[in-house]
Image (tube, rainbow, N blue to C red; front, side, top):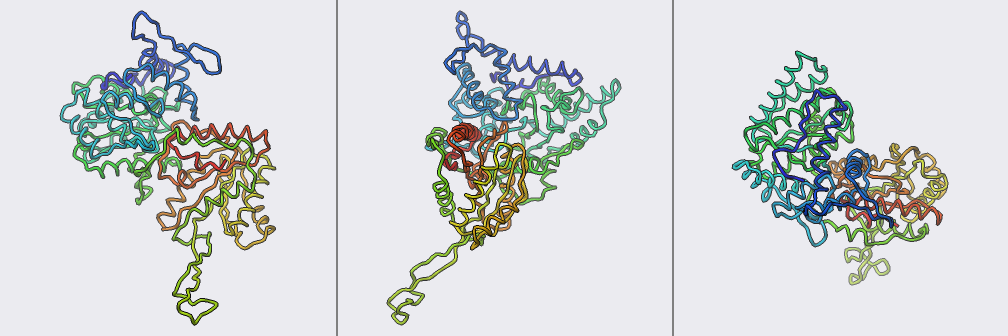
Length: 585
């Protein structure tokens, strides 16, 4: 599929109508990535693609495959089964392929790696493969800068795709300019195009302002520029309309890519194929500066974009009338951010799926015992709400029975701390009042067992205000009265709001030298991850978060298990290979 590294973007004039634009996009996708799957290796043998799931055989024609790909790219939630089906089709249909668990839209990166005889990054136990800036990125940048031919372009794409793959985001169109002068030339081409149009059809003033902001970007002393496209980028109809900011920028870039007489001056790295056609953000790399950068410079540069992207999701302040860059967002947010993409050891997909779920509802007593084990397995040196007494034998303290005998040790009692407990209680529309009451009852029993205060937050597609329940040394009736005052929200289900809250709290705790929290999400697992979601092992919403099933009758338990299995598979696909160990069922 990845044939010509100097011809990736669709070349569609920005003045074409919305209908023409969408038709040409569809035509480009079919020509490049659908039709080749039906070209036989042996000219005498036609290609037949079949779906044999469910005991019946259905033929998959070109339109069906195209509609499946389009569904993956436009559906807001992650469809693991469809991902796997389409990946299997392309696994059998392309020349360069290696075993991997990447998303379908990331397979061009795998193809480039295989073509260059490089291993695919892996976090599977016993097979950790990780790419670094010093060994992989900088040398290939120098080689591509010195000799900008097709093979060095593919090698550059393969290494930068592998290096960035463990980042918890992939929603950007990645492009590389040879030097800052090339980018200045692109900006001049944008101005020329706009000036030519102004005499025929005035361009919207908001678009003109965005174009003026684009013209101010300077890559002379920068490794990159990260741009947040207005209105969410090319997936939004406003940015697919004729002469929108996104349409103009993509058209000029595609013209430059297609018509430049300097091979390698501007190249597209399709690390996410969906973003080639519907980009949400654009990252522009300066190859010359990459070739002379230090590994820490490159890591910090990607950290900047990661922090800005998190701020964009968490605060939702990106303007549609001002072109926001990653560095501008970070300046407004302040410094002091630590990347969430540290080195780590992952667990394999096969291992994550190995532990079976309980075939029948888990008794409350057993569930509380599992939660208690999680809590007691963690300690901290910071002061928290979760305290316990520890006794040690010490000769520094007299024996209580025989204080005058120095040969007998005494007992030394000390106060120790475990991380605070934060419970996120699913109160969406699928949760009944009976289930809510059962969850509250179980939490009361838990607080009585561990005798500590806890934080509680209810959530649906909203997240309620957090309440601190003073349950330590309180009676059951006193604890129950506090639960009655906990804010309760209702509606749909959105785990990502909860995960963002957990990560924000964790950042705050780190900056203030507070302990991390142990997070329990009590839910029926009725949720689908958003398309393209990717985890980093350092996120608190991953490594310190456990999932507890709502109480269910035997019939309801089978329904919950189906949702739990789907949730597990989606989490693994998104990079959380240890999720099964944190699902208490």
